[in-house]
Image (cartoon, rainbow, N blue to C red):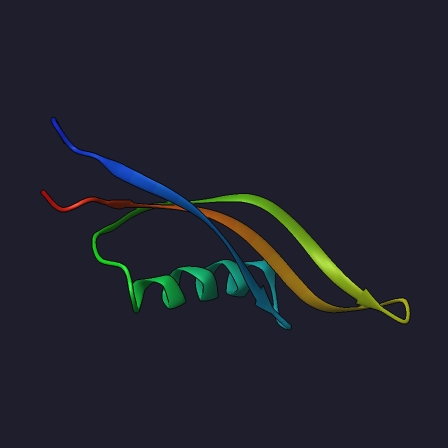
Length: 69
């Protein structure tokens, strides 16, 4: 880890099933275009509500990846 540089981005994943699925979806999607992912931190959880019913779970995720030298 010495002399490493990391970038932290914020993503919002959604799921109709759970917050866990929402967070996983955010990381899985980012992994398709970013290399060397390191840490994913769930920063905030919320739900989308329509007509008094929960229709989606949302997870705001801070994800870090290492810059290549």
